[in-house]
Length: 140
Image 1: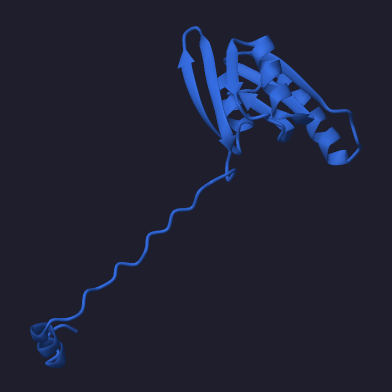
Image 2: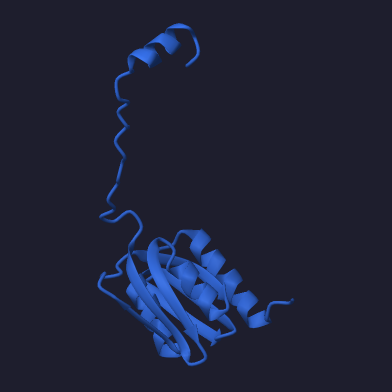
């Protein structure tokens, strides 16, 4: 499938700007239709990227997190895939309906994660019969 010329030119221009290393003001640009979204983010908080998607498309999000992870990049594709790529690094749930997309952003990966380790099972002492079998080599 051939990429629309406008999207291709925008992607090339973004790549050149990002590769040049010049400090540019933080900004987010959203264009396209829900079937083919084009997002350019340049050092902006995730909350601003999601707000721009919410303004342009029928995407609604909510979160208890401040969503301050900075995003830089060019994201192209259907709205639900672009939203999922932008939310990389976060745990989230997405509900897609004919009316739009609802996103619940839970937290960043690794934030306040609790590691659970199981204790090694303690083997009970051997019985006399087990000791005898072990000595004879039957339990090895």
